[in-house]
Amino acid sequence: MGEMVQRAKELAYRAHAGQVDKAGRPYIEHVARVAAACADDPEAEAVAWLHDVLEDCKGPVDEQVIGAVGMELYVQVLHLTRDNDMPQDSYYRYIRNSSIALRVKLADIADNADESRLALLPPDVAARLRRKYAKALAALADNG
Image (cartoon, rainbow, N blue to C red; front, top):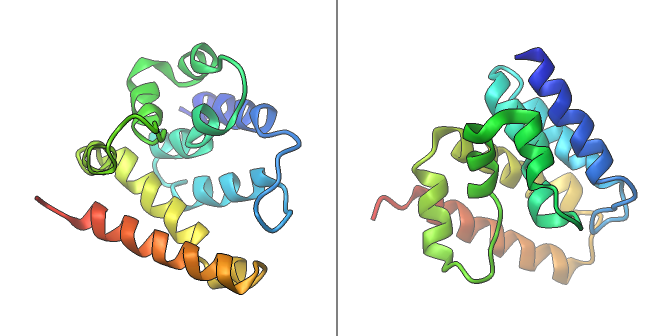
């Protein structure tokens, strides 16, 4: 399992190289914090390292993700990947129905909604993101 986590981590570092977040910080710092929040479960940690790779990185990385973590965990990464053609309720339903994807998404939202991070942003952007994350948490808690 340790090798799988290491492969996922290495792929995340390559895939997010040069990317920055909304505050201008290296994007991989966010990914590392999400992975650290899931570190007690190697499968969740590996998925956490890769949770934004398919969505945020240019080029075909699907095969690299499969090579790093296998098909079963690739599907978890796929559940976490926003597709503009998929209705939002379907996106959150897929996540709710997977314990690994749900755990990673909750860690992702917790990191994104951290007030110390939001304080680095313009007030209007921070307010918009607070609303977005509150709505996401409500959707993930919805059992309907």
